[in-house]
Image (cartoon, rainbow, N blue to C red; front, side):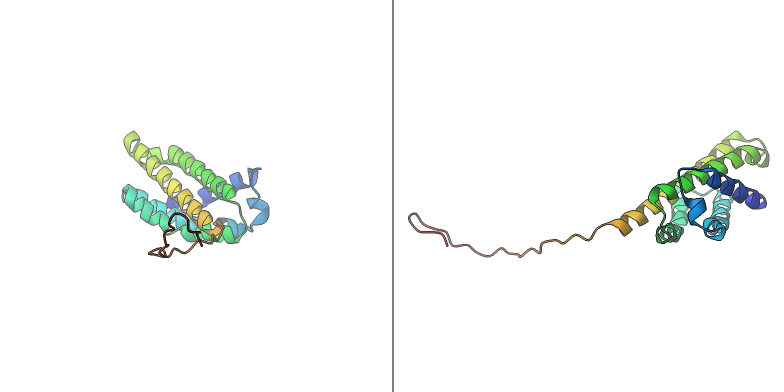
Length: 163
């Protein structure tokens, strides 16, 4: 994956520019658009090299929470961020199908595990983006303060008027 980083990024950028359902291409500069990808691809390559488990994949994805925060501050909508990550998933899956099978010696089980790690990683990135957007867009809600124990109320007897 490291050897093909530039071709993966180019393929992803081409797909982003073709995508009509987002304003990514017109909203962000090229540097803003691809700024997170080299570090993201390097982290993913390390996960694949180390045959990482789900917890390790999740831990690495949490480090990319700043990516979602940056996209929020750039004014992108959550559906655009999810679309961006879905395109990344598609590009990475295509790459693994084309290049990964020969790199893994046509071991289909290893290819299947690599695809599962990539998909798990992108799922975690989407989850982090959803968490960031949910926390950032949550309206401030005033809550009642509770008084405990509640004040004592005098019981009214028959014929007395309640105050």
